[in-house]
Picture 1 (cartoon, rainbow, N blue to C red):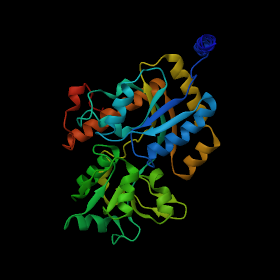
Picture 2 (cartoon, rainbow, N blue to C red; picture 1 turned 180 degrees about the horizontal axis):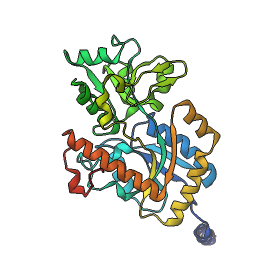
Picture 3 (cartoon, one colour; picture 1 turned 90 degrees about the horizontal axis):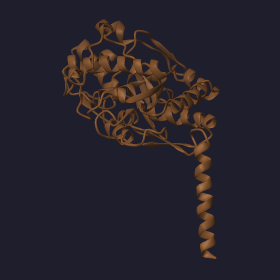
Picture 4 (cartoon, rainbow, N blue to C red; picture 1 turned 135 degrees about the vertical axis):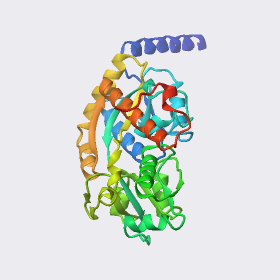
Length: 333
């Protein structure tokens, strides 16, 4: 009797495998490993996006976090080692392109085929009851005493903005790196640091909730946030910021570039449908987020452009460990 049961189980298993083999991708749950901390911009956007994409894909998409290393290198390395079959995605941002020049890993970013959700401008904020009422107050203080700054991970886009702010103002800040925007913002709220630079999309709820207070936008234009009011641009007080800013921020996810074309095509269709959903559209409007929707060759070209700008900007500021030239990264035009 046991032999009959075992035989039937074996036959059913074979039939199931054959049935799945005939089905188009995906046939089982997908895992998206976000390389930045939970609660940050990359994490929040990926969780919202994957929930919408799952409706189109017809399978569950699990989102997990694997932080650490340099510029998300631990999470990226873990996904890159897995099979390029479409069942392992990586939640990334443009800050990840500096992992190589900061000694985090040995690859150029072109090992990935990215999908870009969009971007949001950076803003300088302090704890709500901070003694610094204006950006000038903060700059003057930094020229006479130690002022602590948080701006996500070392070498990421927010850190580059901090370095550019130092260059434009002549101030020197004590930079405290954190494994993502969420812990950077928490550290500011709890006054471990004096101010933070992250994106408007990541700070919007905290600004509305009076946990943080915005001093200035690191963007050529001022912004008006509902329940907060107008936030001035730092470019008016420090015009040399415009020499290399603003930099584009790109947040989304990626798949191993070696994945089959049909897998990339399926993901692209689900991605486009998700961006068109009312949930994503309403979130973008509320959080001053500009949706991009780039995938395929256009997204690869955009990340190549950002890799060039970010890595050579760090090089010019003396803030990288390895020259971009050693990775064959061309200088920006």
